[in-house]
Length: 484
Figure 1 (cartoon, helix red, strand yellow):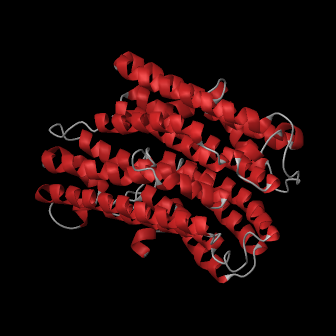
Figure 2 (cartoon, helix red, strand yellow; figure 1 turned 60 degrees about the vertical axis):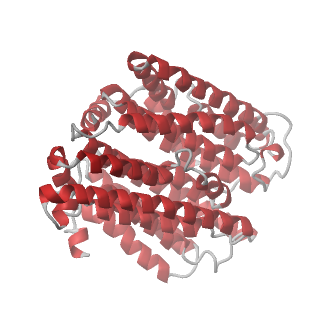
Figure 3 (cartoon, one colour; figure 1 turned 120 degrees about the horizontal axis):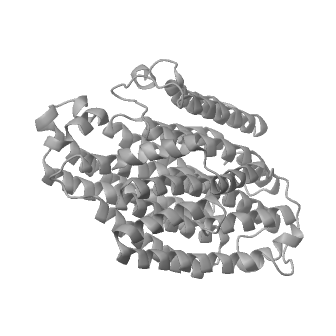
């Protein structure tokens, strides 16, 4: 454990704070104290993550920070903190209404911090075996949280998530083993043959045939966690049946962590000239996910399932962009990933409040929100306009860059890409019109939760659409160049 956490520098604190908090929270009774400590721990993790932008610890054999993973770790910590704020009031309401009991809630906040530890560890791992273990840890904690309501539907969703996630992680393990086997003749046995910084330096000499097979398994394995079609089936159920804060974390964070693993191995493949180009496989899965999810949006009757399929759509766009590669497409992929995390988590904050106020997640039973709950209704409307890719919000900019880079390099691919975006746009605007406008229906309970996390995210997305600071542009451009 000492070797893993290292000294008490910023890197160590990003891991130590959530890990220690998980143990402490597991021992504490009551909800209010644990909710406050959960928020405090998430804030301290965020501050430690931000400090990594200014101070880079030395590269270790198990952990490291570079220009790529620091993007993910800061975004992870930011959304983790704002979600903890939303979670405090949301789960409190669930206790008051009896949907959750203190017994079922006993380890909720401990699992939240354990999940943050797992995701942070995956992002900071300099060992491909440790990366796999960390992704599995994050998955298992979210499985437990998805089934927290202990209803038949919640347990079924958790079990489905566990089974499909286990299949995916088994495929990723086999791919990881193949990479280790390919590296042994060049590096030798031991930890060095699994250390990312050593692997990338010597990847040009690895057996290309082994790398090709490994990447197929890695893409399918980690792609299951990304939510890419056709290995996406766990995602809509997990979103619909679990607590809404976990839906926000799944869409805004865990999918990114799995995508990060895919990008690391894509870089490894690109460093070996004899290996197959990983881009076409990523483009195929990304485009398939986009088109499939876009049409499926029209068939959703549950508002959380609707936005779960929206997450599949947008992870498809991001995977497509990174598969296209090149400075512009990679820049667009990074920007879209950031904007999607902020926007989708804001939407789930709104949806969670809506479900509590109306007592239902059925779209047909939710009407006239802008009249019955004006702040909540207009907040949801802005979030949906943003996620649909309308100007002047940040996702419009990233989608515009994806489309223009595709037109410039592969015009034929731009046709299904634009088609998928337009189909999704129509579905989202059609659905949100009925929810936001018209005569209010159903319960009219006041919303007790804070709107602050939702509007902070939406303000960041709007600001990014209007003006991106030159420092962020330069940073993303540099990372885009690293991705090849």
